[in-house]
Each structure stands twice: as C-alpha cells, then as structure tokens.
Amino acid sequence: MTTDHLRFGDAGSLRLGRVEDFYALLGAIDEAMPRDATLYLEGTSFAPEVKDFLTSRPAPDVHGVAPGTLYSKPEAYHLPLKDPNLAELRSIAKRHAEPEVADHLAVYRGNELLLTAYDAGNDDVYVARSLSEETLQTLRRALDL
Image (cartoon, rainbow, N blue to C red; front, side, top):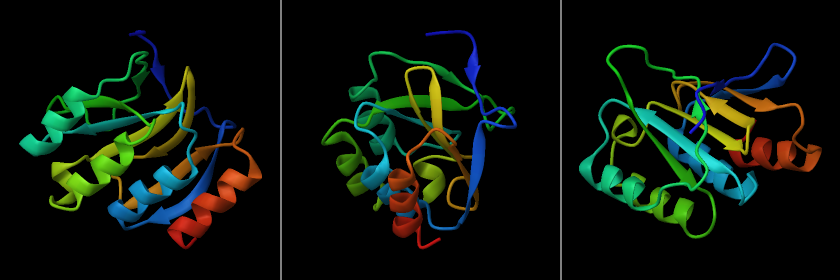
C-alpha cells in the first residue's frame, strides 16, 4: 500500500451532481465503472455482515484514498469491482442502513481516482475528467442526473 492518498486536484475532476440515494449510487458504479477498478469503502459503523464480506474479498493492489472521516478513525476496505463482487455487495447492502455499509466511497484504478462520493448518498459525486463521455452518460442516466 502506498503512503500517498489519492485525491482529485482542482482541475482533475468535475461535479457529476448531488446524489441522495446510496443504493442507486452503488448501482451506477456497478453499471458504469471499469471492472479492473477498485471500490474504496470507508466508515465507522460497518455491519458485521458487510465487514465479513469486504474482508473476504480484498483488492490485490491497494492505494490510499484521502479519508472523509478524520475522527474517530474510520475503517476502510478495498473491493475489486470484478464480477460478482459488487453485485454481491449490493445484495448485502439492501439489508442494512447506509452507514452500516459506508459513510464515504471512492473508485480508483491503479493510482488514478475515478469517482468520489464523500457522505455517500447524501452529497455531491465527483468524477475524473479522464472518464469517457459514454461512462459519464451511463452514470448520469443510472443516477437520474
């Protein structure tokens, strides 16, 4: 794991829009993000079922992501987006309140941040300017933005 935290610079991202449905956000990520990317989930109150699932599917190449929670120290998990990981997480997530799944999330591939949603499901979503127009349209359509 690298010690540098991935974060968007001022010119590296664009605001996709405000998303108020955490579960729709997970669905949009599942639909639009590259399968060789990694989902970063951060929180302070993961449900045991969610935590067990995430610890059983660790990403092989983990990068630090700028944390959204500074106090108390959050837990963080890195889930490869390869099939069927995200579909299974979404199924588990439906049985839990949003904070039991994640407070903040991000998607990255290698050392490139692709999407951030701090206060996931209740705030703005930012995406990398490097994403294709097709990916952006898929995200907007899936999130009704």
